[in-house]
Length: 280
Ligand code: DHB
Ligand code: FE
Image (cartoon, rainbow, N blue to C red; front, side, top):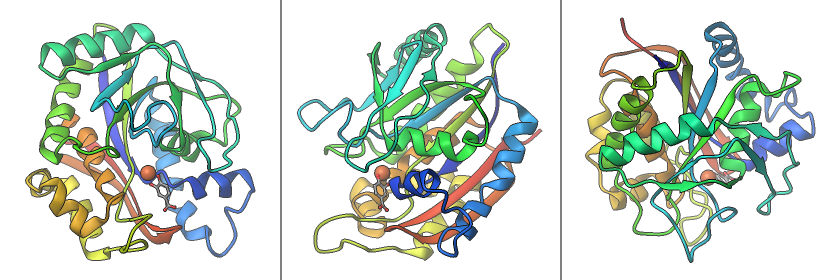
């Protein structure tokens, strides 16, 4: 049966992609941030997953404001990235697993999450920055990948509670797949940031740290908050943190923290990293 080896949270800020592209990892601005990923890379090398389910939001590349599915899943055997405006490079094609994707879609829809199924899907910085952060040091992507897109852009967006429940359903969907696959789940985005409007540039370190604590051992704290409450604290784009709850919902109620890191600011954002495993 497929098995969840753990979950990772990470910001997906496009400037990280540019920094990697330009080899700036060891410069004073970036060093501490990238150092926070070394334990994640070590952990991934150790657990050696076959597949990564990347929970991210499309930022106007594959979907736009005219059509914004609440939850969408890639059901293709390959995915390519394209630049939606941040001048990020085209990376090596990502191999998918359409058969597993269709299983997940079927199971999620049976569990009353009406996913949009995408047999073609362009992936943006929300997906590629996390993938590159984990595995750019290797020649080829060492895992297949499945994009799972959550609308955090065009309101009304799903609630934090709904995302947590989606994660719980995703966990069941994964664990009901008969093939022996090791699956890692990435919850991307956040933490606090707002890119436009009067409050552009806000970051709330205390709220970010509370979100990290909540995702570790009290997911209900975040799941109980309304979209407006999260935006008030974390900013209009900081609401991306609801995608961390998708990852968290797929894990067991009790988890072990393998790694935790927070660095602020990167670009306009509080950047948080977690590696969680199910407790025995
Ligand atoms: C930034 C953060 C994001 O999550 C994003 O999608 C785009 C930009 C930033 O901090 O610059
Ligand atoms: Fe984003």
